[in-house]
Amino acid sequence: MDAQYNPRTVEEVFRDYKGRRNGLARALTTDVEEFFRQCDPEKENLCLYGFPNEHWEVNLPAEEVPPELPEPALGINFARDGMQEKDWLSMVAVHSDAWLLSVAFYFGARFGFDKSDRKRLFGMINELPTIFDVVSGKSKTKAPTNNNHSNSKSKANNKMKTSEPRAKQPKPQLKEEDHEDEAPDAGEDGGGAAGGGGGGEEHGDTLCGACGDNYGQDEFWIGCDMCEKWFHGKCVKITPAKAEHIKQYKCPSCMGANGGGSGSNKRARPSS
Image (cartoon, rainbow, N blue to C red; front, side, top):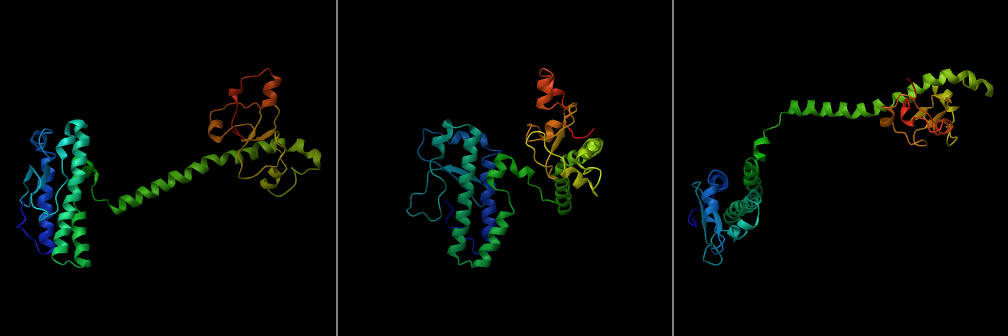
């Protein structure tokens, strides 16, 4: 439609792109009611054109074949009444973005832009929000990011991530305190609990009341407040998260002996 306008430098092509983009964005936002009215599904195949002077136009495609410039999407009016208006405008916006790039790089190819010119042109274009961003409202949230802010945000995220395993680890550590109370009973085996230089060795002598395996430092355990036996959380189907809400824990055996007791009273922490 404006084939006689031929920008020849990167700056001129970018100005051309920017003018066309502004016209198309206005058609799909501030002038949307008029644009909607002009896209009558009863008419023939219609296209949305943007011009370097920031004007827009809904019209039939160019008659010459092949056209002087790449043509925008054909028949945008046919889908107008068959879609939600927001979805229809988004579809037109996406096709308009594709058309703008095709026109810009058509000029680049026609006037022999080299690799650095094409890269510079795309970089300038990429600094602007796309028409889809404008129509969908995404451009409002696309403010330049502050490096300091992003760094502090990532640090905050790291703190949140590391806090999760730390919240679970106190449970085996709490178990060590309760195990000290259990030490006199374990003395029958030859004072293994009383001897040994560290909590790790003491826990190594503790056996799961369900599966009979030894205590592992990386495993979650829970102690029964009735029989004082210890169990792997996985063996009695208790997770650290579930344990947080248990005041008094009864193992399956003690619950059965007490006629089913209130299993929900469980003290889900190996300590406290």
